[in-house]
Image 1: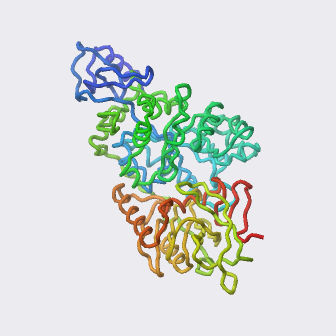
Image 2: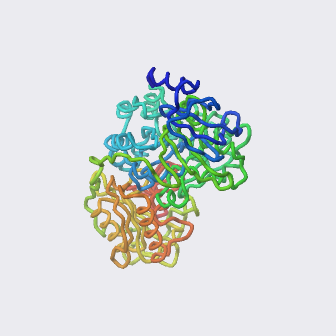
Image 3: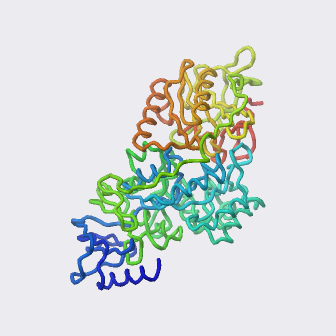
Length: 579
């Protein structure tokens, strides 16, 4: 803001100059006093100037709120845009009509594939869209040294981008063991953020006691991996903000809400983390978090605070988060708390959405430098064969509706050569095919509780290194699905009887597409429906989202990478055969 603009805002606030916009007849939500008052709101140069009075001159533009509620724009405190399968521009088109005006995004998905090229693409692609996007520089690329990603980003790479005004800090520190053990390479990254005066985002599932003390002592600002009230309270006790997550697969909000109280709610925020296009189109974004909290009987004004001012304060966004003079005119108009739904959305004083329609005209950024990221070598059906020492095995056992797994044990069937073959148990093969460096690696394991029968599903969206992950009950269909992904350059595929039943191309890094949200949502819904009908996947699992988290070796207990089965608790490889 320059002096001329500041003068204009003060003059409008004082009634000496016409406002650019007057939103009249509002029921304004005051997040500071936690109350509602009737007023008009005057806006100049995209900033709220004041509340005015009857003697003020007519504004250049007037909008009659007709007694509806006016709230600050909603803030998503932690999200991976890539998980929506949409480009940043298309993501903006989906979430802004739901009232979201600001997000804190960690682009570690695309950075794991494309390195700094991925980060620069996300910066450029979010620069001039209506949605206000702040980035965190990924702290764990790769997530662990026990897998191959498309890049390795260390302290020098962080240093090269951390000073950008739109980079809020260091992204989720998934290597909590490295933090707690004061590992030099991890501390180097933390120090880059500290010296730049930037924040450090947390990721510490099931971390307690002195380990949590050590993690907190490193300067962790927030954590979105809480799933229990105990975890929530333990972190708030240490001054860590807790993000109540409601994603497509990870849904912790209702579990955590009983722990949110009058005394600690200001340390609680909302986030989505990973939310598919279909979830955005059908269920919404942060407005969905609000509706869930309200349906559980949580206080309406505290709920709005968690979606706005709490997040703004956590991330040092002092220019937004409230309907107050001097704040950005990021505003949401809605009818009722009974069924929270954004009617009209302003971002920086510009109407950006109305009645569910996106009104902004965003420039398209070509995804140059982040396409064609498929470097698979020496892959064939032979690489999928799983030879076992005996029929006693370790499995990745699914926990229904969760990405947390447990170490399962079973006795399986083998052919005469000692290769695994499917029997009548709910156990199928899972494989990770390395796609970044041409190593030829194929990690093999067994997945229990997925319910698949008679085919295979595969995707190049496989957190966090995003190698190809495929689940199937026979090698022929698994090979067919993988070859389809290689041919497309990434995406999602279903195979049965040696043929591809359906597939969806993700041309941007094998993670996203430039197609619009409704089209993508419909295509993914179709793929899900086919997978369930043709392959009989369990209702408690998502046909593609569940497998894509099986390659994330920082979520307990057992996962799989391109280098093999991995024990997250012990941080070591695990043999499929039990000795």
